[in-house]
Amino acid sequence: MKHLSTAEIVVATGNPHKVEEIRQILAELGVRVLSLADLKSNDLPEPEEDGSTFEENARIKATQYARAVHRMVIADDSGLSVDALGGAPGVFSARWSGLGVTRQERDHANNAKLLAELDGIPTVSRTARFVCAMCLAAEDGAILAQTRGEFLGSIGTSARGRNGFGYDPLFIVDASGRTSAELSSEQKNRRSHRGMATREMARLLPSILGQRPSLS
Image 1 (cartoon, rainbow, N blue to C red):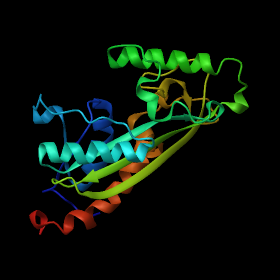
Image 2 (tube, rainbow, N blue to C red):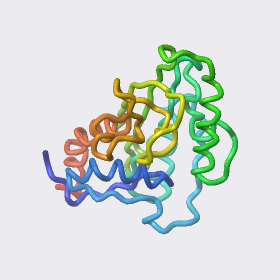
Image 3 (cartoon, rainbow, N blue to C red):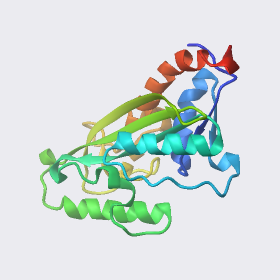
């Protein structure tokens, strides 16, 4: 795999878990991954994620943040799609319940709502998938690449595990009944929707960045 030690990319999210997941994978290329917090810019306008799909919201975030910070930016939009709920919560996953101020409070409220919505639904009908759409934008906001990953599973009846966030403690990933929050970081990166989208982005990066003057 080509080493891109001079490349620097900002991950446009306030979620440190997402930054670390992406950083672990892109580190294999030698890419320096920064978070918005690393830029120490407190006045960045937060884009309005009003797209109807994960792909639209990823493009909105990547292009607007790239123009704001004048750097290459990766942004993703991800969420949970539950078959018995017609694909909900979908693009509204992060704030589905409308409750909570902190990330932990929102996660707790969202999980409680999910369990309530699926109350009485049999195991065989609780199938679901995590979806991640990812977009890489150049410093001027031009879109350089887009990828997508899906992580198939089902929704359990109680939360288990501590190595995750969001709906991870409810998302059953295999026949043993383990949840995504019970996987190690390495196991999750190998299987998850974000891991899949990031690995595909890593596959594209040498060709994309190799054409840029700063890497010639």
